[in-house]
Amino acid sequence: MNTAKIVARRVARLGAWGLVVLLVWTGALAAAFGAQYAGTPASWAGTTGRDALWLGHAWVDGRRTERDLDALAARLRGTGIRDVYVHAGPFEWDGRLDPAKYPNARNFLSWWRARLPDVRVSAWLGQAVKDGLDLDDPAARRRVLDGARDIMATGFDGVHYNFEPIGDGDAEFLDLLDRTRPIVGERGLLTTSVPQVEPYSGLRPIARAVLGHDKYWSREYLTEVAARSDQVAIMTYDAFLPVTSLYGGHVARQAAIALEILPEDGADILIGAPAYHDHGVPLLDAAESVAAAAEGARLALTEYGRPRQGFGLALYVDFAATEEDWAEYRRYWTRDR
Image (tube, rainbow, N blue to C red; front, side):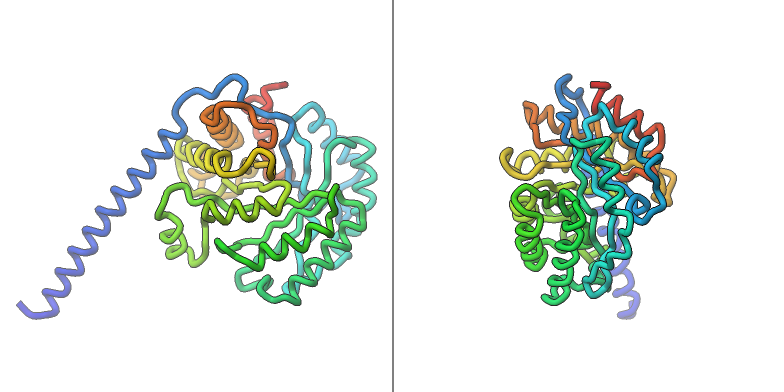
């Protein structure tokens, strides 16, 4: 037998074994997520009035009106939503934040506080940081901080950062958080969207090898970011799990890890709930829902064993949310409190 055929057979065997390992690994992961979604949530598990909502850019660029806000305010009254993050960016590639992007911000804040004075409003700011904004560049970080300072001067209650993807252990992002704290002040809010935490050991390097960037953070790095923040909103959506029980189990796992590692007197934990329907794959739209996220979060609280005040859902996003999404939020999380 010639060498080429021997090599071809060995490659085929290795490929077959690799496929077997992948199938076994995938089955074990699915079983683990399914187990996380099993059981019945405790009756007390649900909102504590510390929920949040991401709002689109139209509120600060002039497309949304005071009448539009009347309708949103009526929807939010009586829910658990205490914070909103209104999109006011993005930053330019060099880190600048053009004030022309939020010309209606002062009007919006005035309308908001006349209707919902107890709901805090943070400026949602971010940018793509892979082949985009370079947060490793000190000059770019200085310009980001200048933009945060300017937007706080318009009257926002805080800054909500959403830079993607931030790699696990990124020291420059920690520096940015440290230097943003004095800008928002002791009474202001510093919050950030964060990626999913590695649910089981070994998944982070695999995901990184496939995607080319970190999909998951380590527990240690989430703890570092949370220590510098008032809230962390874990983006548990876009998990690419095509069955509701797997997605719900994934949310339960994310919430359980955060509840375990983050202290009660530290940052609030917000679990991102997908109130949008444009994954591009019908199975994913069917699997990921506000209901599944809420049930997963309630199961994690039940496992935790007691209510936790700094824990809630964060709905993404107002302009894509349907009546069904809002109904699921009320039924499965606030339970018409």
